[in-house]
Length: 333
Image (cartoon, rainbow, N blue to C red; front, side, top):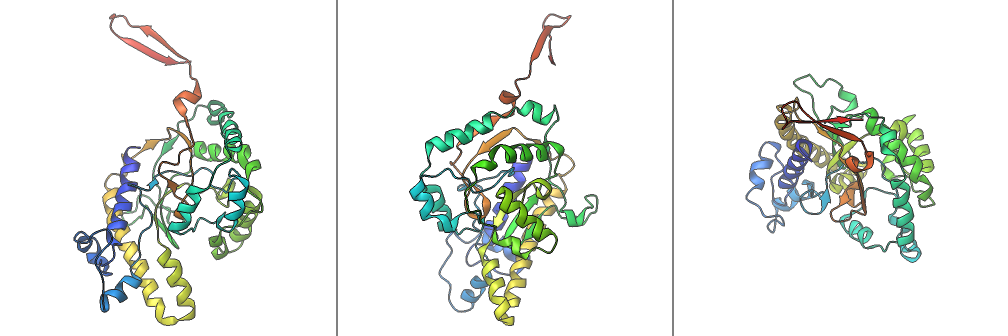
């Protein structure tokens, strides 16, 4: 919550406005022209239809359908009723689900006994000891390949295939929390484990390491692969156009147009955030458990458990009265 949540919502709003059907593909006017269109858009004919094919439709909705969050451990856990889990095996393990897949995912019946044991495993963790008294700040960071946050041209976002993400600085606190949850919950993984499809696009030796972590821990984004971020966009159009471009060189222009469109939208966001980055900082408030939907987002209203740090830490506070009678001072023991 706070500053980071505001800018995550702003990025998602800009992407959603610019991706409305009927919005122009020209980067310079994508934001302004979209304001006159409805969420469903108007019927398109002729040239408009061609533009809509290359114009992405943003699936992430942080205002209604999804919850902004920083993922500590995303994996396919065996928590469903056996019959339901068997029917949906093909959809497991891949963050690139369609919108309909995410609805099916949310509707899957949970095994309450398994869920209770899973939640007990999280509740048994002593977070006070785990984070060793550290503060747990949250700040947006420049992607690893562009590590110069003081540069006036630095971008505090990352576009990776279908995804638009806001990288979060990986602190010892976040890394330790992620690893602690990994060790506590990896025994609940669904088998066989399916490696996310996007891992195949990585270069060596990163690809082999990611495959190993996926098969061992159910996720490539753990341990040395932990990459905290907030997902603000997921565009399946990019995946479809990229695949088509491999078979048809003419489609490559659509792919480039799609990329430039998103870059232009996020540059608009980047300019707004850059002015606030020196003071925009939040802090981890707790750990939540929820169901995932399209693009690895957390479905709104799917929270299954929440462990607030203030309650979990069990910090002893002594209060003493000051010399003026009305002043009270608190000290952490």
